Length: 498
Ligand code: NAD
Image (cartoon, rainbow, N blue to C red; front, side, top):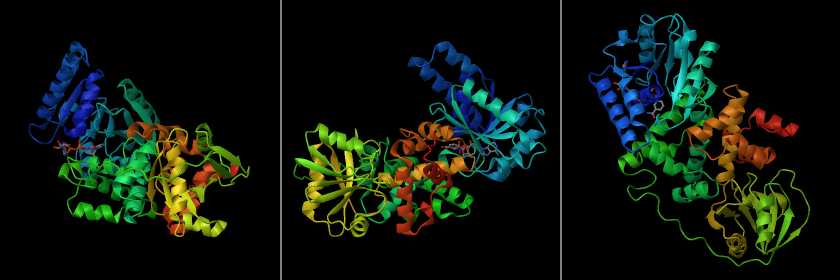
């Protein structure tokens, strides 16, 4: 096989292929770049062998399978050529057109592009059906996911061959269609977008949002830590590319705050400052507020989503009086002391108080798993008393759960994030970008989410997810929160995604 472009991605992919037994020719337009990459891969292989992570003979054999190609003519007998050159459509088209004159009829041409349409790259060729996307993630030798992207005219048999090859290389392929952001770079957008919107309205600071996403949302990293790691500039470029590719659909609109930070040179870790300063990183979390321990709680309106929390309340020896009234929308409410604690359904505490004619409403953010969560976020309505908020806080502290108090915003932090991830995933499935299973796999392996967004939605209840989105759209008037038709269909039929 051949690799064109021996930068970060090209060298990573070359290493993966050589370790898996392929003869790999590496070419780069810049003098000495391919040789430099091959030397670096060989020394990485050596290091793996020294550390005992790879048998010495396997490392040597892989090193011997790497060849520096003096020019593209060296690729004449390749079955597969993967390009990882500059992210530029004319450059990629020109490259494959040149290769079409050199390689055999059956050679497959793959692009590692993150954002360019595979269909557009293929369009320049006499045989566009031989082009596909093989989207590896950085660092390629470590991350298992490869999106196998079909262009509009890609040959089915070619995709199947490519998928088998990726599997033989020890990676996990997921099939998807050439659409903006493919799976991961599209479905992950709301993870950053929702956190940025909460920050933009000053509802909580970056460190609190990250803490809540980690400890209540179950994500390995918060959105701002991750943005600082990826680079705010790199992430903004992806956000803009997806937004523009969707003809500036407000669903994908980038953040003004992020744009300003990039303009100020606050790129994250690499520039020493982003949402946090480095090397210090995020500040220590503030201590949870205190409140009185309750002796009893009323379960005002029941819901599947709140049941695990109520089990935890009972297990802590707190008496639970149940009113046996179901919340048809899947949220649910508790009364503790003076506080009415309402699981967020996308409405603010103020709105719930007004519409339900309640006083002292405190909204509770969704947790990925109330049975185990270490933290919850709470918000008080405009006229909720300090004493009522303390009553709500006291309940969670009595269960050993930390509390972050945020401003009264629709969808809070975790609820809006999980709902929007599921909604985007649902639209990707509806539009035949990928199957529900492929989307969930891609999000777990590509961005390390603890669960696929559709698995999460099924578990938490699609009615609740749908209600959160409906209220958020009503509240903000923003088309961003319109529900996926597929999500609505599942809700109406009582079906699930998986
Ligand atoms: P890079 O800048 O590290 O490497 C690109 C290499 O290609 C350079 O060595 C350059 O000299 C060479 N090159 C440029 N034009 C060439 C040409 N016409 N012919 C031959 N060589 C040429 O870039 P990268 O980060 O490895 O990204 C490469 C591709 O992979 C891009 O399409 C990018 O969108 C995609 N990608 C990047 C990442 C990532 O995290 N870096 C992840 C997935 C996909």
